Amino acid sequence: MNVSVSNNDFTKSSTRDFSEVGKQLETLKPGDKIKIFRQIRVNSVHSWSQSVEGTYSHTNHLRTGLATDRIPEDDIVVTCIHLTKDSGEKTSITVDEFTKIEKLLS
Image (cartoon, rainbow, N blue to C red; front, side, top):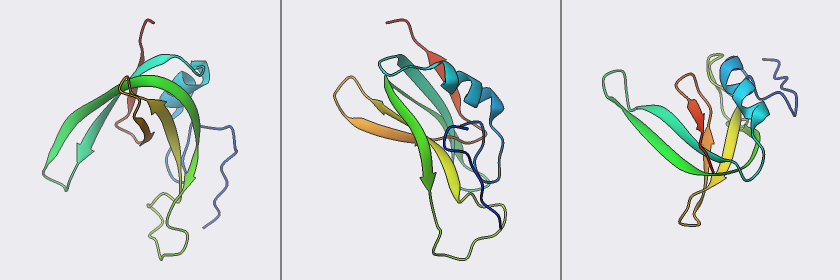
């Protein structure tokens, strides 16, 4: 599989296109308050909504699973959003088709 993701193109991972989230990420600056909503799936039956709120730090690509056999539908490079919660805890969220970002007023 040819993995080609630009260092600054956060609209896609290796196998999926997230143009709506990518456009939102382009408008964020370090220090912006954001809330990220995710749909968490455990298997094909169980899922729930989860959100995290904090101060945006940066976005980069996370390379995963390069040393294992993967099926073509698996991501090898994913977009990763880094933020700091109000408690000071640093956290990272990988973007998928269920990710929604809301910019909060400071």
